[in-house]
Image (cartoon, rainbow, N blue to C red):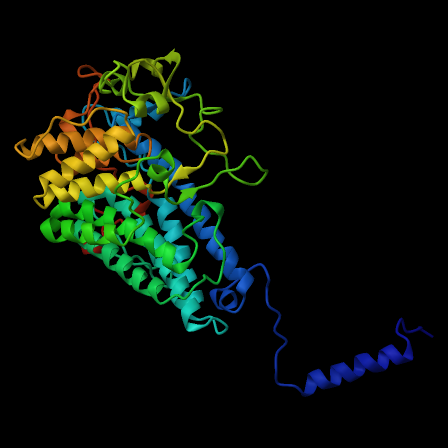
Length: 478
C-alpha cells in the first residue's frame, strides 16, 4: 500500500489550509520585487532617498558630454581620438558641404540623458506628493528640489537646441508623445518652474527628507538650496533676455541674483569658486571625472585660447589661462579633419576632481551682463574689474562709461571665456549675442571645410518615433 510522504499532522494542516482557500473569494497576491512602482516608493523613505541620489547622479551623467560638445562647437576644446575621426568631423564639419549636423551622428548629445532624468524627476514629484508619512514642509522641500533639477535639465536642452524648441511636458504614460513647444515657451516654462520651486523651498522647513552628496555642501537645506535655485534662475533669465525676453528678463535676472549665493565682492579663489558641484570618485561602481587630465589624453584646447589671452603688467598671460591650460604633446586631428594643438586642460587634474554646476564667478559676470543691458555701464565695468583683477590678475580695464556698449560686452565675453573655460558656456554666449561668426573656422576650403553650428539637431531616434505626426507632435527639423 502506498505510503504518504506527509506526516498525519502535516497532512491535516495542508487539508485545513486547502479548505480555507476553497472557502475564500480572495486571490493570493504576491508583490514582484523586481517591478517597483511609484506608489511603493511613496511609502518608503529609503526608496525616496535612492530616487533623490539617482536624480543627482543622472544630472552628473550629462555634465561631461555637455561640456565637450559645447566646447567643440565653441572652438574651446577638441576631442582628438586617434582612431575615431567622427569625434572631430561630427562637430566641426557635419554633413559635408551642407553646413548642418547629422541627426544620426555623434553630435546629438544633451537630449536622451536629460529626458531620462526628467522622467525620473516626474516620478519623484509624484512619489513625494503621495507620501503619507511626510509633513507638509517635507513635501514642499522635496518638490522644490525636484523642480529645480527639472528646470536645469531643460535649460541644458534648450541652450543647445535654441530656435528648434523642445518638449517640456512629461506624460504619466511614457509611451504617450508630448508636443514640441517654441523656444519662448520653453524659457517661460523653465523660469516658472524655478519660481515655483523657490516658493516650495521657502516653505520647506529646515531640512530635506533625504540627504544630498558632498557637492551640495553649504546648499543642502531648503533655504540654502533655494540660493542655488535662484542662481540657476539668474542664468535662465539672462539666456531668455537675449532670446526675446528683453528688459523684463534682465530685471528678473538681477532680482534672482540678489536672492542667490552671489558675492559680488569676492576676491579669493575660494569665494570665486563657491557653488554646488558634481563630485567624482575612483571607487568601484562610481564615476571618474570624464574630463580629467590624468587619463583623458584626447582632450585638447584650441590654440586661439593662448593667442587671445590678455597680458598682465609683468608680460605674462592672464592667470586664468596659466592656471587652466598647459602644454602637452602636439596632436593633429585624424585624417586631416582639423588643425594640430599642443595645448591641453589642467582644470580637472584627477579622476576625483569635481566639476562645478554653477559658481559665484559666473554669477558675478551674469550680473555684469545684466547691469550693462539695463543701462548701468559704471556698474558693469566695476563688476568686470572685480573679476579680471582678482581672477585674471589683470589691470583694470580702460573702458569707461563713454565706451560703446558693444566694447563693454566684448570685455564681458572675454572674461566669461577665461573665467568659465571648459564649463560649457562659450558657444552658447557667442550665439546669444549674434557673434558665432567670430569663432575660428580652422579649415575654410575643401571637403573638410569647417562651419560653426548654431544648434544641435533633434536625434534621429526622436524623429523616427514622431514620423507621420503633425503639429507639435512632429519633430522640428526631422
